Image 1 (tube, rainbow, N blue to C red):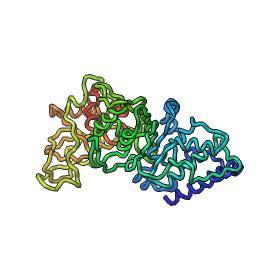
Image 2 (image 1 turned 90 degrees about the horizontal axis):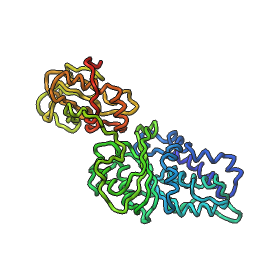
Image 3 (image 1 turned 180 degrees about the vertical axis):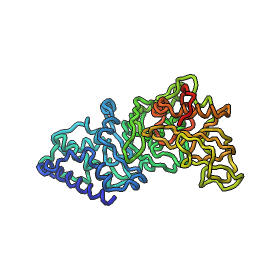
Image 4 (image 1 turned 30 degrees about the vertical axis):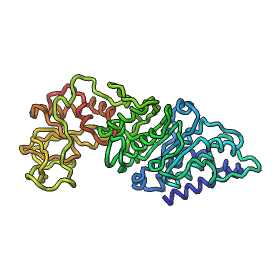
Length: 438
């Protein structure tokens, strides 16, 4: 992070010039560039991808922040605006677009400073956010007036270093904006929707809903696993008890380096916690409207073998893991073997790789398993065992998985990087040709 701090010092120096009234020098340095994507470019250039992934540091692009915070959200009402994971202040910059700005820089910063609240655990990010907000006011025409002394350390007193999950603010914001970290954290979930390692983004939304007043609005960028993942079904139900989903947009890949698909959601906090209306799905999950699905023709399950968790014990069996399963191929002989005492599967059956991206040519890549012995299957594979146990049905399953309609359907249904049992079960059963998939 030290290399990025050098860039932030540069940014702070330009903000200090604006605060001191040295306007011509500020203009010579093209301050507008510091409000667009340059800060994100510098973070990527100066901080390793590995470290950024560990702490979940991926700044919001100019286009994404505009799409996230709609005009109706900006104009909804006055009051405190809180960003619980503000980073370099991208979403707060979007909020300032409708805040009043005067010709007096001190007055403008005072108005904005009483309304904009933010926290981040990285001190250098907080410094960058404050400096960029000063430049945003400058670019709105606000200038330091003679005789007025301004200090970068004293502006925006409600934006500071802190952990919003540990010490949430005492005030009650009426608008919340956030692009939280997507990393996994160990957190005790009081609402009971999860345990152990869960997405930090889900916990951030919980915390926002906990402190928000009735009718408060929330605009958030969240990983698609929260929208479509089976594990977060109870989380979605809890959110719907507390808030109404007023807008949802499936965006796609957040960032080429982040390698995660996201969606944008706007929430409005309810006056009372109410159960979601049965039959409604505001999360935009593509449900199958056809009469038959893949789950009607086979049993679907995740492979039960977790290689580094299960002991080498039990009968010696063929062992199938993802790297050995040929794409769209047929396995009549499995070379790898291991002892396993848990659930196994009698061929024929089809396995699907769980790792799957919307950028892949095929979302559900299948392999037909047709050996003679029962097989132990690794947990990176999903098993589809036809109800009638026939090889012909396995071939039909392979053809359904290979169909373009299946790719299109899955891209609408689930955009996180792992297929779920439910999403596979819901795949529409299209008419399958008699020929094998090759």
